[in-house]
Length: 471
Image (cartoon, rainbow, N blue to C red; front, side, top):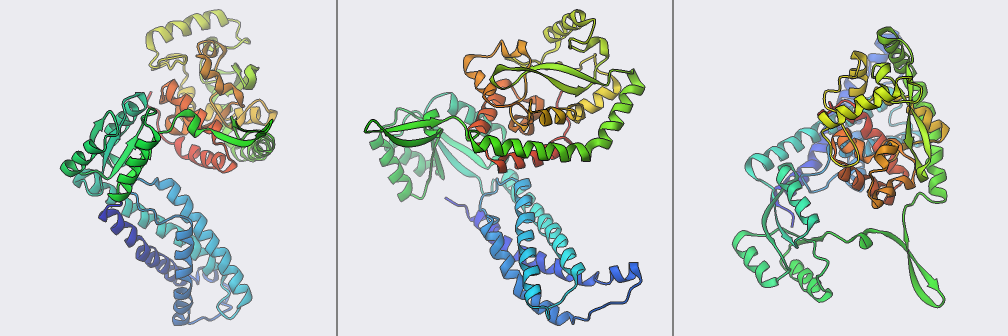
């Protein structure tokens, strides 16, 4: 059930977007003489402002239609701003292309490339800024006044529900308030809760619920305008294909879309994108190499053995952020001492549980190393691992052999694809996530891979790099 506040904020987005696009168009017209002033060239066209406004007024509804088709009028307050920003950029760019085509066909409109391009950039800026401020106001009302909070009823008792409760309790900005948590889907009990405390949504996580019980609950929710959701079992979320085998219907569970053409497409993306990134980031890598050499000398790059897809060993390239005598690599003549010291630090300072470790206030780091490790600059040489084919741009984090040895059997699912320089786990919490949470995110990625998902994670990685790690 949609809240009145959500309907209001969704509805107000339409006139707000129209106003921002109009403002962008007027701003572009106001600065139209800048190219002539800078280059001291005469203006080659004349276009009355009133006629210009008429054209803009005709264009604005077209932009609003594109925004709607791109899903920019979502009702929920919990939508992610970075995704919304990408959609604004994409939708506005589509509108720009349409305008260019229209002007080509109808030249008497106007032919100022500066107005068109500056209008596009300003529209993206103005609409994004207005949306940001509107979303901030909506979230403030949600957190401070409880305006738009969804009253949630949970059904079922198990670990998945417990984790959901922890997530909702620790994140009030998600917009949920748990009104009750019951063991079974009793319609009578649900009716009482709805009458006494109100219910906007029901989330069910009870594998023992029969089809008849689910049907009754779904009907009740439909009649009472309550959103019905359920947390599925592993089999229910798996990708599958149906067919006939020996005259009998058969279902095959697909482990990942990264089979056949999916793998080819991902490899092609890795080669092209890593080559471009190496070219763009080469100045950063050269400066980093120089800083390491000045502070602690050579070697600048060290190779750390990791486990890749299908359990194959390979060397990850990294900028050295530790003093050489502490680097855990075969090239270090003091490898045994480095391993012993690392084991001591793990025992005394590790802040992670499970197969992985994370040493707090690691004394082995250099000054340069502390900086480059904080912003993940030390991992840039892994782009060459991607070119070689040992790694992918996006995938599970590559782990050391001693870490893999501590895996439970089901954890080995992470070794079914190439490890990545970045991944869902990294952009969701970087090195601050517990291993089990990291594992679940990586398995979701494996099961739901798409090229667009890789592109989204790449873009989000750039934003994540500027956030300081917790430890």
